Image 1 (tube, rainbow, N blue to C red):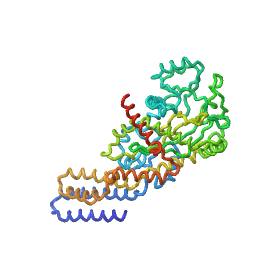
Image 2 (tube, helix red, strand yellow):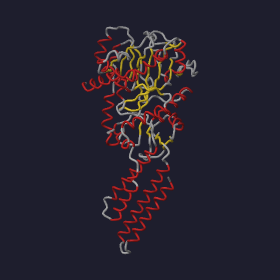
Image 3 (cartoon, rainbow, N blue to C red):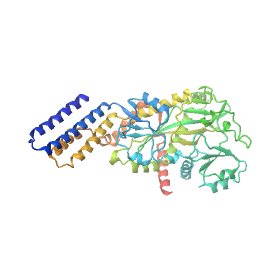
Image 4 (cartoon, helix red, strand yellow):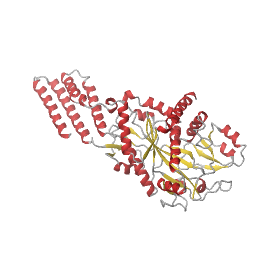
Length: 492
């Protein structure tokens, strides 16, 4: 590529020199204009050569990412390198720890990607999650029976009080709306205390959990949403079994403050002296170990995971109209074809009850990627590496996009000029460079061709990701739920 650019540069300079030779000596103004244009052309060609030299890599911007594992995964992923520059156009993927805004997505170039969808707070915060699942439960009760009875306070305070006052001694769990890592969560049998809280969700405590050797546990299940239109959702086959560090007992007034017994949060339990990092018998174990446990216990692991996958899909469906509304506003296809420019990894916290039925506890839009144990390293590195490879990014798309942006910006300057030389150079830039660049992917491919390209890459590069939507076996059920979600969303 570098030799080609050098030859192109010589051709440009030759054209410039020939025109300069044709000019009479007295045409000083014309020569000065030509010299200025020649400097512009030389600068363009140097920039194009720079772009060509970086054309084989995908650049991940990690400026606002604090997790070491993301950098580790980048080094293992195909063609990825870390971007340390400051030019907003020169990174390919932006990995951001926090949620993203519509404006940030609107500013993306067609060749840029970001690891969040606008509007995901609809399930990633506890109060909107509760409200959206309740909305769906009102129109599809049998399909949305996988979350504990919940009350968003203060909005549902009166409803909660009317229920709780007739259930003296019932244990409730109070969760701050925007809390994470177990911060601010507590259990209580004093419903008036719970009702006095602000900006939180009050849930009925699940007192019949499945136990592992007398300990309560939950599952951190990773969900990868590749696109919203079309909707494609994957469940990562590897994840974390997070086990409490005190043996479980039915909750009572006397033991409900024992967080090591009742709360599965890793951040909390690792502070207990009983916390064990052994991957086979410790406080955090793998799904591989869990499947082996299911088999030894005579349980149908395939059916359990299928039901967990359904919880993930139905949860996303509950906010699908909102997500697509954000997508329509921020990523108009005719503008830059951004159906695939956003992606998201969510962390679902799933509790299995004594009958092995999954219950959704919460959803994390930026699940913790800290590396507290060797198991964390294994699970999370693979999670991110495969996710990045599944994006099906062709680095040449960015190279050509950068060239296109550069040439078009210079053409706009040249085309304002009335100088004959500038007009000539503008024509040369357009004919010899701009028109010879391939069109962006979304312009040269049909939507069907683009979808097929992405599906192929996802199948090829995501061996540990299981496609859970679309799902032929549940196609009719899910389509009905999507329509109910849409109608109930726009009627509220």
